[in-house]
Length: 474
Ligand code: BES
Ligand code: ZN
Ligand code: ZN
Image (cartoon, rainbow, N blue to C red; front, top):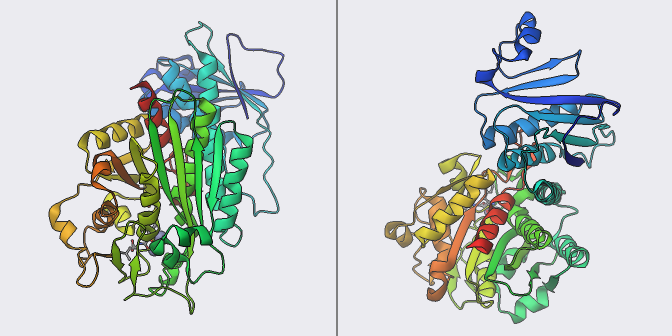
């Protein structure tokens, strides 16, 4: 969809409509009150004025979060209507932040997962034009470009996550990554196959994939601009399916586990967006792509695995597989000597219990880094909250027979014990440089919420991009 900014409304445009965003408090004094009140509309929610083809949206507060969500809702509303162009009127405070929020919401609200429907809805909407009659916006082109880049990448990430596990195998993700490196300047791609993983001594990663007929892949994308200020390495959990392994998931919990690759897909979207924005930061995206299945070759509860870092791991539950894949990927990532190292993973159901479906967990040892990431997330519109490590939970993953155990002895604090497990594989010199983001809640929700459709949301992309951009300035 095209987006643009115009000073005047082109009356010659055919099939044109309007979206008006108004603070609720301004409704009764506005010209719209007279038109809408006879129909019983008092400024709560939205109202479509037929005569002028205008969707009036009254906002509780004229703030970025409300505007972003209103953008998504307005586009959803227009999906069923025959208009081709829509003029946007922001009748409250109008600045770059608010306009960006509206467009991002609209472009993200536009996406639906329909690839497996034989009857596709026909969408006639082609262009959104923001009216800036007073010429209030500076750098409008930049704002439009950022909204397009972000939304395109978010929607691509969503589509990849939504792709069924039969199709989206580790090899498929590797091919997808290769294509990114062909399409985007300054991005390179290296793929490690099962032989390479053996040579790298990634015993934990390999164990998880042992029972799958699909071979595992480690994807390494890199973006190296000239004069980069910092090196940020991202790691993503890319489980193309997680049935739980021999510690099999109950049937109801297995459904949606195609989305266990969300972290891996997100880091590919982040690096692509950063390259397209031309940010001055070297970025690496590492995806541990594997499939956790059952079979005669499956790894077992009672196994002891040899990780790439040299630590041994007692397996007591094969459904705690993400941390095993990540342990070896984090080891590989540290060899790149990052200034900042961040992993994104749908790691624990416990994180969803703790924070709800809409919020990701931020964990790490560096208070300042956690705060910086949290701020960037908030600015981007993603909900995130810190989950604090403590020395008592750390004891719960001690093993009697190996260096560490892959599950906690307690039923409680599962998101934190998983984070602390990962921390066991972070070398002393990188402990302060590392963050772990558990996106298990918001990555995949089977109902529409905020600017997200039912299914994959692309969680982590907005926050990750905003954080990296903030580091480019810092
Ligand atoms: N992929 C799941 C976590 C998950 C759950 C993601 C719900 C998204 C929604 C992960 O591999 C897992 O199964 N974790 C276990 C860990 C447990 C065995 C310690 C869990 O959370 O139950
Ligand atoms: Zn699992
Ligand atoms: Zn998993």
